[in-house]
Image (cartoon, rainbow, N blue to C red; front, side, top):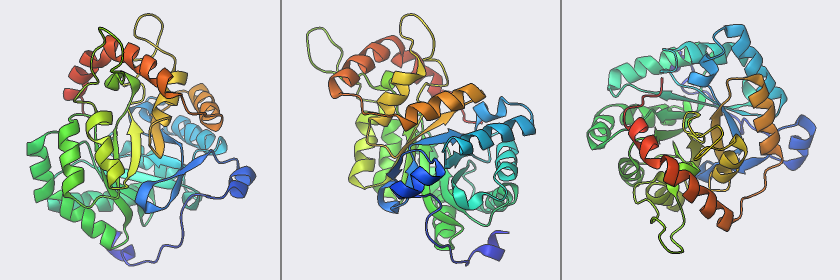
Length: 321
């Protein structure tokens, strides 16, 4: 499928960009995805483990259709999510509506030839001739970056050159330093990283307060992405739901999503395993107002003190599947 469609001409953006179009279609607020120039909805539906929690294809399709109805126009999937199951579900659910959405997928393998084969399989599962954004999935440490540079990076460039992918990027929730190095060194259009209040701990003011963590994505990788005008996408807003709940160090989704969307990001990619979560989160996005900096400082310090060490430990061994 990839070779068959590799030189087709793709016209315009996939997402409505004007205020009038948003009002007419009910699309959520949008932001420009960095140097791509494309506008995307500030809330993207993550179609990983949380979509797979619907368990049945028809239930997952109902969730995707509800997201569309509620104004989401960005859908994020990957070959690794359920070994292709997510891409299959997304492709079927979006059939006939592909032109309405910004569609991102990811390739996990680092091998050059296998990545080409995976791209063909992804296009077939997604029932499309191109994706809007193709990521190198889940960058780890320096040895992993070396493997990316040896193999899959050339495939990403080729897919962009052939218009099979409009844009290319790299994702990471493991090591901010390695991601920053990758962004400095290579010609990506976008990046997706773990950005949440508990990973940062922003404040350095006052007595007996911890310093801003030197190893947060917000501190290390985000500035590089901003300087290069990349399309910046946030993930792990609730740290795989570990930040949600009552009691010390816990929160509702409302301030967590508001904090992340107050950062210089184009969109937050959020998994929503219940229909009520889709309704609630799209309502938050539609009525978003930026969190004042002083409030961000207080909230992130509280969440970081209670959670950062545990989250860092978890993500060191966590594989997005």
